[in-house]
Image (cartoon, rainbow, N blue to C red; front, side, top):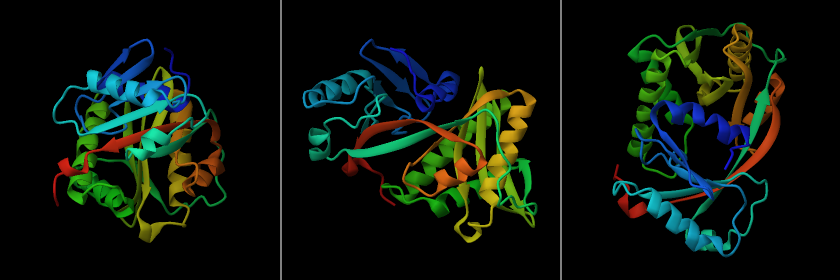
Length: 268
């Protein structure tokens, strides 16, 4: 099975670094080996949206694929733009998540470009600690705060290892020496994928995010590290307009469902 959607396809940048991807014929299995309870990093991807008969089969596929007893979730995605028949999934506590996959091969300077923002790659452990605080400040996950903080920390270790391997960078936007916005951009074979674009709530609506996305995109395209950039976003969230203002265009709408066993969540 071939991955067509730019969002799912660009996920391979990360999985081919420290994970595993298996073509099982009817679906593709993605394993984030360093973060087994990364819900959207350990999942099965199908070509078509589910129908009423797929629930039991997909559950069996997942449980056969992911045998680590520490895993307490199941996640499924599909490449067709339809949502399909989700009745059995929703009845059993699964949550639908939709993602817009946007791409750009050139960018435009946004009207709200803020020249006061100083942009650089992260250089110290303190910089990474600041990124964690910014991401926690905007996050409302359906997980205990401690579990979410651990997830972000685990992801940061992956990104730092990828940076050391020459596959990209994490960037911060600073005002008076304070990190107010950040993102990651990683690349392979001409394809670049953004990660975790975040701006602290106290510094939003000042053009910082647009400025950071634009400047990092411009640099990556000019350097030849990537010829196409991919940004994934919630299609109903205001941030998508920020990316469109820089020149990103929606190419696909991806859907998936996820469930986790709340009884097995660590307590705060």
